[in-house]
Image 1 (cartoon, rainbow, N blue to C red):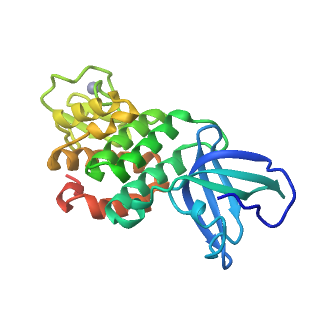
Image 2: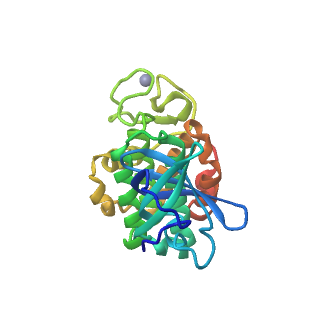
Length: 265
Ligand SMILES: [Zn+2]
């Protein structure tokens, strides 16, 4: 759909392909989009009148939509002039469990991706994760777990999972390992005698999730207790370093985590 906006005869200043990772509604029919693009990282743009049923921008301004957007620059802001939906990921909006997982991924990108700075690896990770969440048969919790550990690694917050975060020793043969977000991840028993323990299988699952390519994320299939354990460590870790994900993490946790898995030991 390509209809000129506002009857204006002008060239667009910028054409970007990106995913809508946040929408903020204002006035009666307007919306500010945060787009996540491969070339330019996060970009905010106003979409005027896009919430009117007759607006040519209605479809391309929905949450999680991947589209091509023509923007022009006006008074220090980007304005969406035209947009074309490339992939709507529409089913995400019809399933609260998948929606919550997608929202957590989007919140992480909103917090951890820089404005107007290219970030192709994280863009690819989000695109593939949304694709599997929409069209795959994976548990949304598995895809969220894989997204979390890979996102943290790509964005400079990689948790220690093989070497102790404090002394650097390889812990793969250790009988007791703890996971302490404020120390940077897994810690050996000598470096910390207290704190919540993490199982070897959970650490091994995280290592394997880091080794996949983005188009192999559909292979992540964890048993429910292992999924809950992995998420129960990764979510508090991510919240510590990226506190802005709190609201999305709370929704995700309420739908995907058994209450006992979220209790602190
Ligand atoms: Zn240690």
